[in-house]
Amino acid sequence: MTSRPLFLAAIALAALQAGAAPAPDDAAMLKLASGSGCMTCHHIEAGAQGPDGLAPIGPAWRDVAARYRGAAGAQDQLTRTVMAGSNPYSSHWKGKVSGLAMPPNEVAISEADARQLVAWILSLERPR
Image (cartoon, rainbow, N blue to C red; front, top):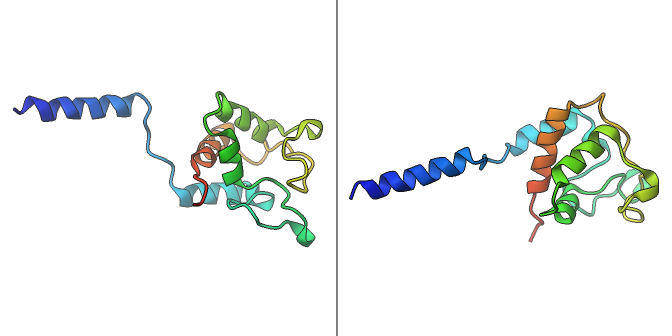
């Protein structure tokens, strides 16, 4: 009978080794985002206003998570956007935000930190 608990423990260990990592700490990600200047244009929750009562400069991160949830390559694509910026002529947030494009952020955040932040953003759930 002792083999069953060992079998279950082995399955749990295999799942962890297969890439099931714990979610990054919210406080650490917010500190990283604030220190990198992300919070100047973005909010976590939808409905926040930008300067002078306009639409926010950038999309709310919960909206980003909802739009890209389950999309193949989303983390890589969004990390590239954070690092290199976005094209103002192909923005799918047009009319929803007051900013025209995301500027390149390679001087403000490392690619490794951007990747970690994007993973956290994609993990955000929509409020119920």
